[in-house]
Image 1 (tube, rainbow, N blue to C red):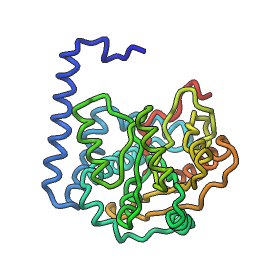
Image 2: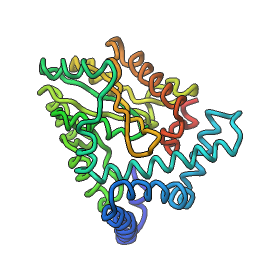
Image 3: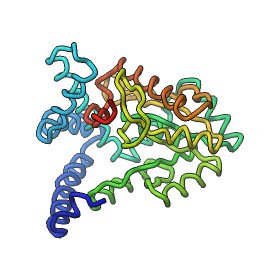
Image 4: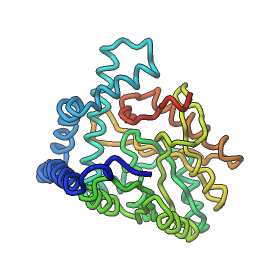
Length: 299
């Protein structure tokens, strides 16, 4: 399939990628020179007040909130969208603060029935697939696990901007555990990692064309079932997890829920949807409403 960038002059596309990365990474580098708490608050504010409104993310979040909460007053949707962008900005700079993030999270309490389950799997050399969504800061719980000696890898999708992708991937690796790109080579790598008794993080709350239509926060949404399929194939525990941001905006509740019972991929994935939906309803400002989660072909 021909992409939009392939229809453009390659030199123009390269220049746009280079300049946009220079601006974004420059902002990140400046923020990283600040003390941790100050940089997190600064980028959160910049994302909610400047970046989000400027690039249209805040408007998109308001639209998606209206899809789920049609009775909610507009001023409340606007406030939630602003809070959503603040959380997204904080999450980005936290995840670029790899060493400090690990130091802050290594002794952070882990709660939930999944804590004992992942410890037992590690002791027995069994694989674990940790599943979450773009909620709170999903990397906070991964950092807490890495700090306790777990070998938690992650699966990622390459960015279209190759300059940004370089430090994006390096940043994920700095948080500990191997990082595997989507695709044949990445799949082979994370399967070997799991078969060796490792743990892998997967995020499942993005629209995937051709995936089954399941209920998500009360609306139909195409949802990837690959995490459940992999858990069944490798006899791995499938554990929902969350990094729930605390009211201070800096700390986290790191939660591992009980493993999803093995049945069939659709049933297991719907249970994952239901659990994440419950979290979103409780704290909607912590989910990334900017994602195009619901599309017309899901209806």
